[in-house]
Image (tube, rainbow, N blue to C red; front, top):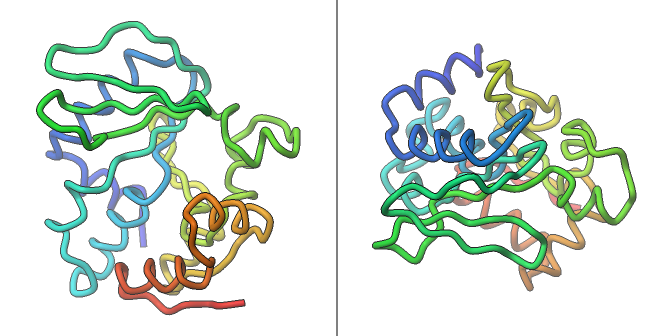
Length: 195
């Protein structure tokens, strides 16, 4: 299965994705990767269309763009932004309070900051909490990265990938990790791999 080609097909006419990407490019320098729920749900919905309702999640799941460097250049008309304590920036349409997408500097990833690991996309993928989260689409090279995440998609499974990161993720969410995995499995129509 050519997953990068599938991604390009799925986003070719997606004005929400294309608008977000244009803003990300205008407000960052260096490499850009799409990561997170939007990416794995998009791919899963095209790989297994009977398992998910594309209309339900696509407009309620913000996109996560990981960038080398965030440089605030401009915010287009009709858009607003807010910043988190961690230095991540949420962009939203002014008529909505729900973020459409986030710009996340790679150096702000909690697991990279906590361990002092070198700031690379490979270290982000290595320390992603869940298997399906260990996935990134390189915008400029048009490649899908993350063997663990790709395997999870193809095997239709969700499990813990990095125990310490999963523990921190569960704490931030205020839920046990098994409960989070169960929710993701139900959303995706996948199989849980529980500890």
